[in-house]
Image (cartoon, rainbow, N blue to C red; front, side):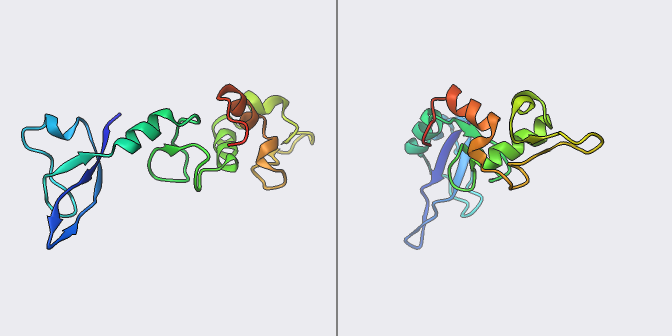
Length: 140
């Protein structure tokens, strides 16, 4: 995992603040990488992001809520998104097999998840409940 950094360059008294993830710490470069926004070569490590991303109890998520890795269940990344991603990955397998939200009763019809369809709350999803128990996340 890379090092989250922010540009320190000032142009006409205005800070650039462009974010970029570098493969190594800025001081390890002989010539620091160029900023895509301003062209500057001064970076600092965002230590709060390093601490937060590695210590958040839910860990890092790569669902479709954001284009980048982010913390689970924060912002647009919700339990509903988690349930939806789980459904699309396993399509009724895994934790879904014994779930009450799995609607696979009618023979000949494609089974579907009531949580993904919006008929049931995500807190009743077996995959979400299992994830919360494994990571001790009740109440997040």
